[in-house]
Length: 154
Figure 1 (cartoon, rainbow, N blue to C red):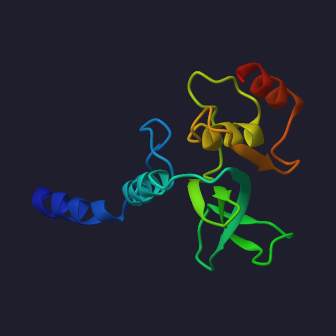
Figure 2 (cartoon, helix red, strand yellow):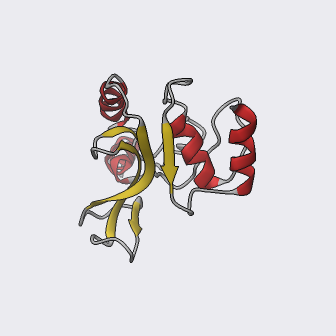
């Protein structure tokens, strides 16, 4: 066997190697392929004037796809799917959203209030200030520390 044939066989097997990206170091999430589309949709949602009464809640987008991002929530009508945190009005229109990708980091220039309270802070920062908006959320999102911080900021 010549050296040229050995090199050829090695180059044939290169596509069979699987390289795993360390996406955390690159600033990527698991949605990095569709993130530009999600950002464009979110930008359009943020242009819509907001209602006076709004709520932060979670929704499940049902799917049967195989994905590491699927969540199981037994209290929802569709048990398996992608978890999305939604800022919506009393009419049911969604003004802002944030997909759950496994970790919820605090917003820059805001203290870390815990995962659920960080969601509220992130979605509520798009609400215009001093226009008498009222924000509602259930007990999963609330904490004493967040309540103290929101009272101190008003």
